[in-house]
Image (tube, rainbow, N blue to C red):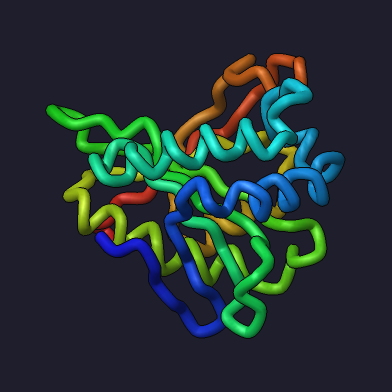
Amino acid sequence: MQFIYQTERLELRILSSDYASLVRDFYLKNRDFLKPFEPKRPENFFSIGFQQNNLYGEYKAFLKLNHIRFWLFRRNDPSVIIGSACFSNIVRGAFQKCMVGYKLDQLHCHQGYMTEALSFLVPMVARELKLHRVEAFVQPNNESSVALLSRLHFKEEGYLSSFAEINGKWTDHLLFSYFPDEN
């Protein structure tokens, strides 16, 4: 697996801790926008030091293919992060699966960037890691994300009550799964 890929409009990169200020800027700029979709963040999450440590850990995990986060940049402006796509909870053995999560800068929503990124990354990661399935968990009221997963040929498989603590509250989620052998 490579550190950088390009699609028509995007550059998808694995980042080292040298990019902590860009990641911190992304989170600060989108703090209120992402709040309803993410766990409650401690105040130090928004510091460069926290992001340096986090990026260092993610970089090491990528080298072992245990956790993979690609940061999204527009090819015509490669100095600003516009989102990320993360492949985590990679389980081997009888399961051969992972979870995909993603986020996009509020100013770049509804422009097809996440569709472009995930339509490339999901099959590529599944193929490279020889995964049987890729799972995504989405709050039922997140209509944009539900539509995105449907466009990407994820199948809705179930409703999970009180599944994840998001912004300090236990929330229900829908389970969607992508099967590389069927796509």
